[in-house]
Amino acid sequence: MKKPLRFKFGPGALVTAAFIGPGTITTCSLAGAKFGYALLWGMVFSIIATIVLQEMSARLGIITRQGLGEALRKHFSNPVVKVVTAILVISAIAIGNAAFETGNLLGASLGMQSLVSANDINIGVWAIIIGVITFIVLYLGSYKLIERVLIGLVILMSLTFLTTTLVISPPWADILKGMFVPAIPNGSLLALVGLIGTTVVPYNLFLHASAVQERWKNAGDLPEARLDISVSVILGGLISMAIIITSAVAFFGTDFILKNGSDLGVQLEPVLGSWAKYFIGAGLFAAGISSAITAPLAAAYATSGILGWKRDLKSWKFRAVWILILLTGVTFSVIGFKPIEAIIFAQAANGILLPVIAIYLLWVVNSKKVMGTNTNSLLSNAVGILVVLVALGLGLRSLFHVFGIF
View 1 (tube, rainbow, N blue to C red):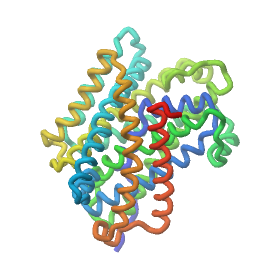
View 2: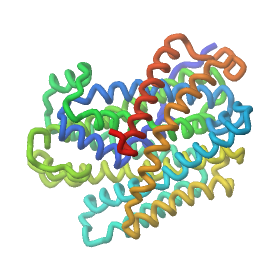
View 3: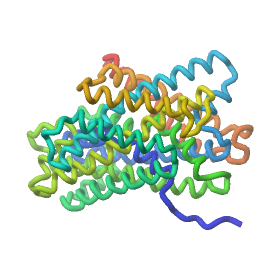
């Protein structure tokens, strides 16, 4: 007898909390400011691609009871391939997340400055405070606590950006056209790559495969897991689209130079008045601190899995990984260091990692030896192959951009 399908936010919220960070807010803001609603279709594609890949990751975790890092380690028999894979994963996930953690903490700090109107407090001080909050949440070692905190932050982001979009009364006909009629305006290719790249995130595949095991135990739970990831990712996509729309209304066709997501509050003041800075502040804070929690957590899951360590939130090895990521982010934030070199490395590494992991996922979820009767359907494979091709194109484009080829 099948159990009734009921929706309740779960591990999918971690995925949304992870990909909606200050970098996403900035990328979406710039896309809306420069190209209006034209690139909304890129977000629609990103939502579909993310759901497809994350569903595979969740299915792998639930059926095999392994994280993605463990699966990579166990199912590659060639020792050279194992070593190369381990180096690739640890480099891209651990080092890359340390760089991104700086942006997460600074983004949350900017949000706090707006919320409490305390510009006289150094942003490094806010970074330390938010770092301490993040440390406490992770150190308590309770998956349910982490999940509840992140669900709350996702709801806060949703209310902030979706409400802002409704208040500014955008042109819905233009929005629908942008969502379903693909267009690539001159000079928009890099922005399109950025939109997809900030949504289809490699480290979320590691995070999700491990996190689902905390909630679900067998194949009978797959429908609930699919509903969770679908609703959560669609909600995250709507948040991203709301930021694009808000920025398009505020900046598209004007001479104002938008530098980052926090600048959104400036042009929204005519519509939202003095509330503008609070709306943007709440959104930046929620996005920053939620990603500040998930980035170290994902790095710990990935590193522990690939090295064969115990995936226990209270294990000292597991804690050592996320503490190192968090401390690096706090240190860079406090001293004002902008880890450009590390971010460039992370961009290149993730460019390689995304198609590699996507191809591996397709392989493993089609293996009856690994998945039993829960292998991919024909439709899943068709969509999955399309996602892999796009991921491969994104990876090559990222590498070319990093090394200045074009």
